[in-house]
Length: 170
Image (cartoon, rainbow, N blue to C red; front, top):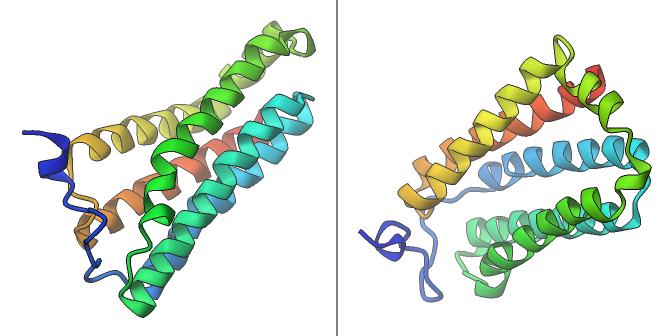
């Protein structure tokens, strides 16, 4: 089954069953990603990392805006929906590239010790498992279904909260 068959959201789709509370709950992972990015950015001084994080953050905010517009006005502003498929990977790749390009600003041993320390490692593991689930959802489930959307939001929110707690404990 192709991805398109699983995810029925198209340019012509008018999302049904999306609500304002759903849009506001979708803001949770964006907020916790932003808080985590600030914490990580303070530890790892890299303009490239910050640029990637800002792209991801703005992409998430635009997607929340799309969902709110879809819920309130029953309109699908397609560029606001589809931008996330482009900007989110670009942002994450930029953040990853910063780890390579600006590696002189990293103390790998100290960073690994903090990330693998207890109990922070449990939160990072839970966050990573949540992100793996999000990948599975992206390729296997129909995000235009409000029930699926709530499930995705819950998993993403919990994963981002876990990453943030892990960073605070590290």
